[in-house]
Length: 411
Image 1 (cartoon, helix red, strand yellow):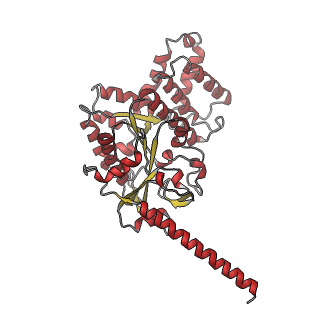
Image 2: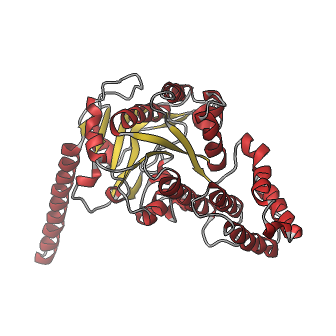
């Protein structure tokens, strides 16, 4: 063997040795940062183990609670326990769901007045949560707090996806605008606007709407919003309606379909925090993919390409000057199943190097890592957007992660 070849081989061995040392250091860093959580049961009311999460949250007044998938009941249970802790110990009195903005903000007003019961409120939240058996303790808890320490319920999603919206939204828009001179003086444009809402805000929007009609809708929507105070629900719902329609159109708006929805959710959350509940602390209940902060640094996500463009968490953080904490949920293996559906999807343990495999070495079935205090600036694999591994510097996308070794689906 030539001297050059020997030197080359030695160099390669040196690089491999250095890489192994670096990996061991990374592993030790994450293991040392991993703190055990004793339970995810909503019935576990001794919150001593959650104080490490409370300390990490600190003075944050908006906390994002993500979830890997909408069919993972184990995560719902963990989030219910966290909701109880955040409400009772840290003073969080608002839950903003990834659900219909118009419906939940309207229904909540009636619920707080005592005009409707908890079942009406529950059914106004998307069925992925409202019909899951393991999530029912959340609604029982909300009801139990009604008299002495009420929890306000809100929605952030621009989609008018509920039965309440189907029955009441068009009439609501008409009622707040019919008395305005701007609308009375040009009933043709006003009726055209109302008809476009009816055509577009549905599961299968009208595909025959022409570009000129779309441009009219955008311009007219902006003029209508100017008729109301910037703090008002009426103005925000007009903006929300605009995005509810526009997110169906891929040919006119610069953002892609689901990203337009995330932008709208960010705007709705910002309005809730700065206009409707400026003195309250808010819990955001949504999918991981809406909660993380830096979509542009996530790699290898062909399954969910829109997540590379924008997220609610990203858009909200661009505007909000206060302190926030984004908690992602991850797992090692298990299954998912949506409420009232037969299909179950199974997920095996990852065979590659990832954060979940590192945490598993601690033997903790439930754990928490506070990313915000870690000095780590490299990418690593993690189930940060769903139940599959993706690569990113996740410490810049979440402030912390909640680990559940084995996940299970809804009943």
